[in-house]
Length: 348
Image 1: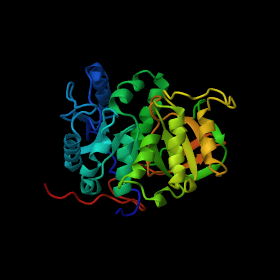
Image 2: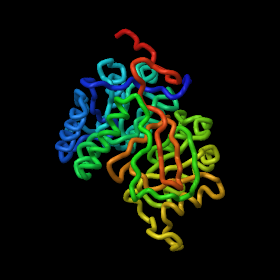
Image 3: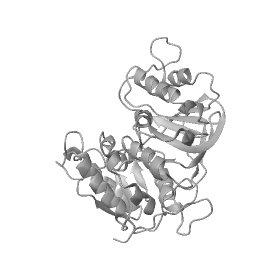
Image 4: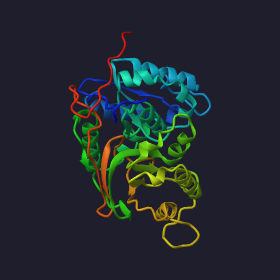
């Protein structure tokens, strides 16, 4: 059971230790240089950076960095280590479902710390939010993000992202309006305000079939954000139908959809009759529900990520193509009103 929501980690300060870890997929040799650049980005933010032991080339089991029990053991050790102030996932993958039952949730509650990542890591955000109230830092991964896509965006965009992430991790204040671009589209006008909940759509749907599901009341008034990569357009429609049947779509107040990535069967123009656009899929499933929808926002697999912190209240105005983060994702050293500090960690 959780107490008051959300559970915010302490704000990071210069010199704090950030650990890059393989929380799911392995590190392949071709991405070693990207990882090095990611470490440089984090050091440029003023942090000390360490690589966790499983994060080394050639260390893998099937599609994971190690067996689920090994990943969980390393993850739990990082959660329990008071020197570690944040954990950044090196990449996504397919392993998090394998160790949900091995996570030390008491350690999370005792010493909450930011865990950054998307894709398979969004499953961690959802489960930790469900079990402890921890704010989930749905943000860029180390290797494909900081060390990859961040290196290819224009200088102005990278500077903007660096400012957003600095506020996200160290500011102790709300980010406010996220920077809109031409890609953002209003799929259904309207306004909504509520906590952000979401991630990659298949994880949002699948976790609800496990004992680690978010209680349905967590979706009351929430702004559901999601994205997808790979697979078929029909899969997206099916996952949204699962959320409809589960009652999730009857509880949310708004929806924000990321830029789709490598999804087969999506049309490029509405009304084709054969290949639907992503907007058509969403509106088809929503039916007559009066839910504002903002589409093609930059988070997820399609590019350098805007931060979408799980559990933080957001204001959405789809018609005006605006999305604002109304609360900080971290707390200052002295917890203010409405914030819940972690419990004192047990002696080691």
